[in-house]
Amino acid sequence: MSNTTVDILLLAFGSFGILIALTFLGEVLRARQEPGTQNPVLETYMTRIQSWWGMVAFVGTALLVGKLGVMVLFAFCSFAALREFLTLTTKAQADHISLALAFFVVLPLQYVFVGMGWTGMYTVFIPVYAFLLLPIVSALRGNSEKFLIRVAETQWGLMIAVFCVSHVPALINLGITANSDRAVLMIGFLVMVVQFGDLLEYFFGRRIGRHKIAAGLSPKTWEGVTCGVLAAMLTGALLSWITPFGLFGAVALAGAASLVGMLGSLVFAAIKRDRGVKDWSHLIPGQGGFVDQLDSVIFAAPIFYHLVRFFYG
Image (cartoon, rainbow, N blue to C red; front, side):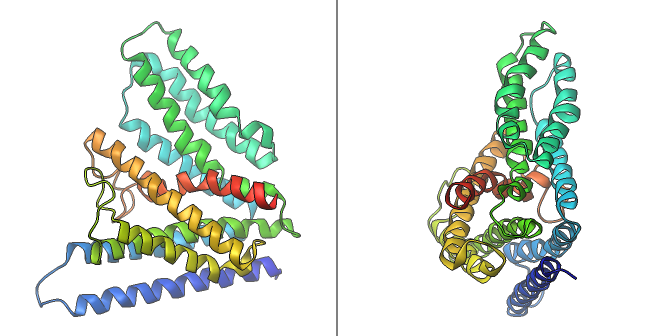
């Protein structure tokens, strides 16, 4: 058994340990409630914890498989997230070909480029080539009704669901670890710090939060975000041993990724308010769909990628 495999297993068991502690905390708070009453915030928190057990198992399995497992997992996440996003957008029959190209040409090619390590291609393919060519395909169909809205929503969907998400497996290509197999551990680091920061932001934001960041969009509070970012930084410190960043680098990167992710989730909250929906879908119990689950990672991934590339690449 290689050292990387051992570290992945330790990371998975450590994650399960944290989930056990968070589950125990939730059960203690449940026990303190009046008999026959329920706290909606606490119940949502517990449902998120239950869903997290499965997510940690899926990510851990993908990391054990290696680069191929990671590529397949995040390509599937991109497909599901793009489908959820475009379901709520404005479309016409004239867009059918461009949508098919987005799903079955642009998305696979992006991950092929990432898998082959073509940095110059996967960093410009969607924001340049897909951005310019897909509107041409729609324009050739001759329908100008709400054309700008239709095109912009498709491009935005590709950017967040495919371009940004693909920067998670792209971390493998940075080549900053002595052993290339250990690069997958950076993916585990990113997902863990962002998602645990989000989870604790939700918990503390509802328990002690008083000052909302954007009252018209989200119940997020400054107190909750502060606690969430600090929790992410603590998680980063605890996980620094699986990264090439060192203790202080891991803490700083964890804090930056968590903060950007939380602010990014406000963007998705604004989109959902605009569309008149609470969740993107109901695929994951207690957490909506793939976009609901990935919203913070979507914004954090490219920022984390470029920070790591700039300071360590």
